[in-house]
Figure 1 (tube, rainbow, N blue to C red):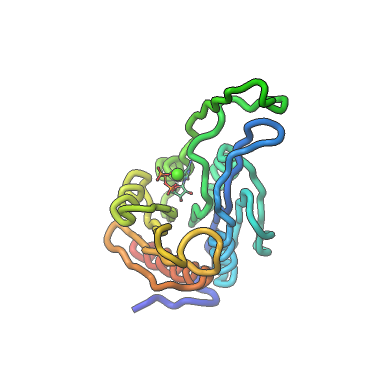
Figure 2 (cartoon, rainbow, N blue to C red):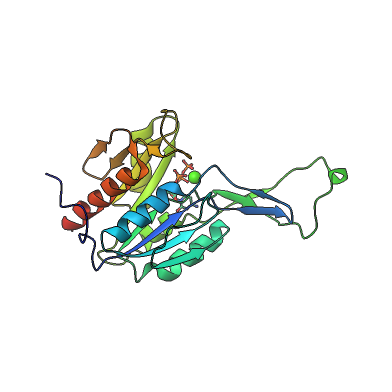
Amino acid sequence: GLPPQGPGDLAGLRVLVTAGATIERIDPVRYITNHSTGRMGFALAQAARDRGAHVTLVAADTASPPPAVDHVERVESAEQMFQAVARQAQETDVIIMAAAVADYRPRHIADQKIKKGDGPAVLELERTRDILAWLGEHRRPGQTLCGFSMETTDLVENSRRKLERKGLDLIVANDLSTPGAGFGGDTNIVTIITPEAQTQLPLASKRDVADQVLSAIVQARSGH
Ligand code: CTP
Ligand code: CA
């Protein structure tokens, strides 16, 4: 059956949650970002707090203000998020990467606004660091790592590959082609994937999804 859920089952645990969309600057007035609103990460941070955890939230760009958890740190770029997460990783029992992190950033940030007369514009991009993969390589003993995965095709296969490649305990897979799932909105439909199993949850509020994810984390930790 399900492990106990609710007040107290995360007491004593230090949980770090990332949320929102990173911003990669092009010039002083332009940037690259994505559709993440931060709501899923905020729901996770709030739910973990309600269940007794000490919660740190590392938030990039979000559509609403963050919930009142123990510590909130604002970042902009993927590199800033990496620095904030890496600095705190050793003191953290559970890390949940709900943020939508840029895979690429402009190779150069222009000091001055780029003028249209300078065109035709070609934006040269370079890869950002994969924060979760780094965490998987520098994992502290007993630490639990949870990723999120956004896919439009082959949800479970592609997500399971990410779980293995990054060395995660669980990954929460989001099918963007399903109505009611993904960006914005109050609801989500996710599949929780562990090395041993996969569980598709019914359409639920982001808060209920957050509680199910936290229960899966508790279960994964009891198997350590
Ligand atoms: N992630 C990360 N660092 C990055 C990119 C992604 O830590 N530079 C994390 C995300 O926060 C998420 C997980 O990796 O928890 C999976 O992100 P996703 O974009 O679905 O997968 P990628 O590994 O980036 O692969 P792709 O975008 O090509 O599908
Ligand atoms: Ca990506």
